[in-house]
Image 1 (cartoon, rainbow, N blue to C red):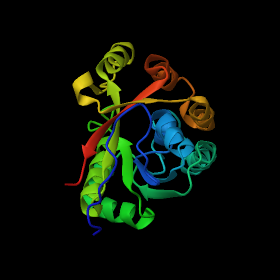
Image 2 (cartoon, rainbow, N blue to C red):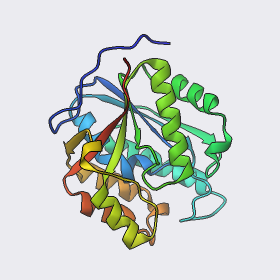
Image 3 (cartoon, one colour):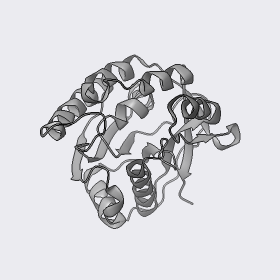
Length: 229
């Protein structure tokens, strides 16, 4: 286990000056639909960003087919290249059943894949959409942060954005009030939108990503999910 390190605090409207960040997500497309603009901000600030994706998304409710895992793997490669992600580690844990995988095993996989990051980036507690896989990926990222002694940052939705999405799409989006949001990050969405376009299998009849971006505008929000003492 690495000793805890003193890390930059969250302040201002720019990403904290980490040299390296590892993003942890559950499915191909989470890195684009959700984290894309935040990843872009870190990359354009000079950070190395690696990605650990815990499933191949083979059981998506938005698409189907025997080749879906392979197709989504290709989509992830396309999106990662656009976002400027350095390395992608894609695992084959069961899509839709991450909670069946022991947390310790997920942690071991993440630690084996990352390259001495100074911080981890993942979804907020609650998984943004309430998806159990998202929540499990977040739990794993926090546990890894604790083991490695590094901060864990959660991408979060302001409550007014989450409330609108809940009303329009009848989905359990998790929002936070202003006192729970630690950083409002100014973002450029051009790379994110190009990366989203890579995920064709998940876009047909899915208006949520673009609507969420429309509501969020030119900002994203982060919370500190774990900070080493």
